[in-house]
Image (cartoon, rainbow, N blue to C red; front, side, top):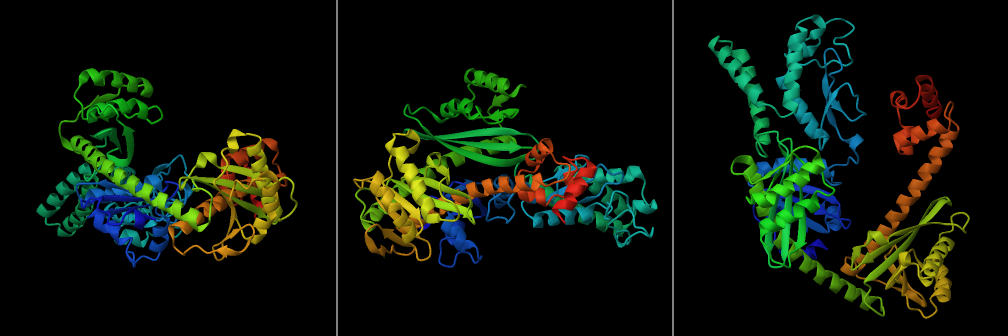
Length: 606
C-alpha cells in the first residue's frame, strides 16, 4: 500500500530528520533517522529494500509515513532515541514491555554503590536510569562510565572477594578497590556522585573539573594521568554534544507551532522534558473562519490540555498579552502551580519554537498529499473488489469473523469492522460461544453469525448497519455451516457472504464450487488479508485473556496459604499468568509473607 500511496515521495523533505512508520492501527512500528528524509525513506520501497532481512515484512505493514524535520543529523539521532523510548516500536527492538527494557542501576542503597545494567524489578532503595532503547545503547553507556569513573565492579552489597585480594579492575585502573581500603568513603561517594551527574546529563561541571585536573597533571609532568584525563574529557565532551542537539538546559516545556492554509490548519506540539525532545504531536484543524496561525494555536491550547499533562512553561508564537493571560490562568488552575505562557525571544527555546512552526507547515502539506493519495487508493481498491467478487454495491463496510479456542475450551469469536478500507475499532464486537461443546469451529461460526443477524433484525444499534460484505475466516466448511443461517435470517440475500481460506488465499462464494483467486499482492487481496488478520488477532487476544484468567484461577486454588484475599492481591500485582509463574521468591514476597512465598514458589516450580 505505501508504494502506491507514495509514488515519488516528493512530499517528504530533503532535510535531516526522523521518519516514523505506522501500521494500519496507527501504531508506531519503526522510527529511523536520516540525513536526507526523502532519499532514506525511498530506500525502503526499492526491490532490494536497504539490505536488512526484516525490511520486506516492515514494508508490508507500513500504512502511514510521518516525519519530523530537524536542523542537523545529530539532532535527528537524539530525537530518534527519545521517540524509540517513548513508542517502543516493534521493528526497532524485539523487546515488548517496560520490564524487558534495560536500565542502568546505581545501587545507592548500598554503602559502596555499584553501577550495572538491569531488566528486573526495581528496588526503591536504588537509582534507575532509562529505559534504554536497546541493550547495545546500555553497554555503550556503561563502557564510557567504566573508562571514566573507577567505581567497583564486584557483585553483592559488600565490596570485595572472599579471598580478600583486589581484583584485576583495581590493577588496570578501573576500580578504586574500596574492599582493601584504597579509597575513603567520602572519595568513593564523590565518584558515584559523578556517575549520577553523568547519567542525569549534567556533564559541564565534570568537564570543567577534568580540564583543570589535566592541566595540573601536565604542569606536574604526570603525563600518564594527564593522558587518562584527556580520554575521560573526550568521552564527556561527546556526551555533551549529544545533549546540546536538543537543548542545553534541563528545563521542561511545550512549544506550539501552527500553520494555516485556506480552511485547514495544522498545530504541532513539541514536548521537551528535562532538556530533551520526548515527543511530537500533530493535529489537523478545520479553519472555516480562515483566522491566522497564532490565533489557531491559542484556541487549540485549552482543548489540548483537557487531558494532557501541563508543564511549567508553554511557548507560543503570539505576543498578545491580553490573549495569553486567560490561557495562563486556565493552565495554572489545571496544574495547581504557576504556568507561564510566552513567546521565546532567543536561544534554544526559540529554536524549538521555530522547529514546531516549520514542521506544522510541512506536516499540513504532507497530510494533504497523503489524504488525496489514500482516498484515490481506497476508492480504486473497493471498486475493484466489488467487481472481482461480483458484489451488488461498493463494500464500504466489511465485517470479518474468526473463532479461537484451545482444544475446545474458552471458545470465543471476534467481529471486526473496516469502514472505507480502515479499521473502525469502536464497531468491533466479541462473543463467548454458548451452544457448542468442544472444538467445532463450523458450529461456532454458525452460532456467532446467527447471534449477529438476530441483533441486527431486532434493531440493536450496537449491530447496525448491515455489512456490505460479510467475510468468514476459513474455507468451504465455515461457509457451508453459515449458509443455512443466512437463508433463515437474511432471506432476501441482502448481505453478500464470502469466506477467505488462508492456505491459498481462496475466496469462496455460496453456490459456486470454484473459488475466486484474487491476484497475488493486489490491493484488493491485501485489504481482505488485513481484515482477516485483524479478526484473527482480536479473537486470539480475547481468548488468551479468558484462558489466562482460567489458568491463574485454577493454579491459585491449589496453592498453600493462598485464600481469596491473597489470590486477588496476586492477580492485581502480576497481571498475567506468565508473570506470576515466572516470579522469583523475592518478587512473590512483595505480596505474600516470606514463608508462604517460599511454599508457593516451591509448589509452582516443583
